[in-house]
Image 1 (spheres, helix red, strand yellow):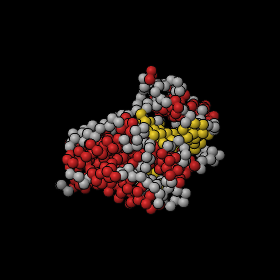
Image 2 (cartoon, rainbow, N blue to C red; image 1 turned 30 degrees about the vertical axis):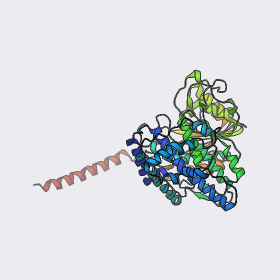
Image 3 (cartoon, rainbow, N blue to C red; image 1 turned 135 degrees about the vertical axis):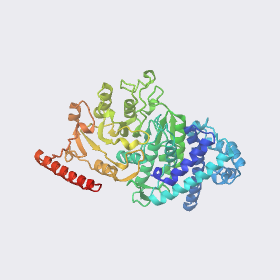
Image 4 (tube, helix red, strand yellow; image 1 turned 60 degrees about the horizontal axis):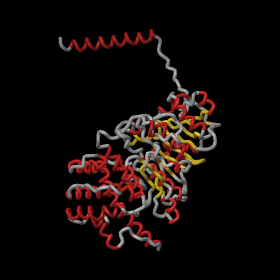
Length: 512
């Protein structure tokens, strides 16, 4: 994981400090401006690679930087003198970026009001030099640790958030990449599936699904690498035919209520090869929700923000049936409506949703049990989202079809990282065990309630008022401790007292 690379962390610290001292102190503004620069570099790299691939295969490829546009490349920009560089980006490069995908694209729509506000040539030069170093370190990390896919912008975003004391106050922190990969493995998105995230932020779940699908195309594992968390992922270069690419470009749909997040998400997916990502501004819980999205998705992956209560008058009462203003419950309702019959969701919720006793909590759980096939409840330890949040969370997997029969429970104890604020890499991890046990689960065999994974029948869950907490069904194992007889303990204490008395006498004799 790049976030545990000290060299990269040092560069991020340096970059953040440069922006702060250069007059850009708002963290999201700084992140957005840094992302523009990273985006410029990635566009140049992707275009150069595609030109080389096309030359090798004989396929036709039209460069983004044809003719005079060659001067809009990162490789050209970075060679300019400071003042000329700033002026060139402001007047030529940034206007080109804002309309990169044509006037009718999501990207152009949301970049319309974007501004490049790096105030000085000196700050720009310093930022470009640090970004060059960042990419060298990322490439080094990739070659040494098998990270074939890297959420580059996401890593930078997460590490920048780590620099500010207010990180996470507005729910603006990323789901760790290894948890995203875990959910992708569990829900198993395939080529041609429509994949959605109703609160996508920087697009991490959409990118995770994209990377997983690409890896499934590498049937023989020719381009596969295993990362430090045990996940096998393949590079894209030899796997993307024109038909596959066209399918992927139309597969991923995300929404967010923060325009900055929408821009970051669009650029993040484009930096990884999705040329026309479908990320848009929309409050998916409000009356402005596009009802054409109902019954539309094969896969929904999400870790929606849990910001408390909404204004009741703003909630989409037409398609959301739960009588509540709590976002953690309304998002369960919304995700269920988005799924088409047979569609599967993998979502992260606070553990309080599993056992809350209020009517709305029970009603939300009934949606997954009575109107879906609830497949799995995987509880996670509270440290998974540190240092941004310490709340205990859980993963829910449910399919909008069929009927819940038996629900598989698993208690994750370790995710491969320490559960304190440092989140250092450790040997213990349940991630691969969860995947293996989930894919081979058998209700007839897994009935040991003393184990860390087992099945619970729908009937028992209903009798328990739809409680989905692991501890409600897990049987604790108590070890019997045999204590010594009181007279034996007393004799040992007397002997110890006598020994101490003798040693004190010996010490005292030294001073006589």
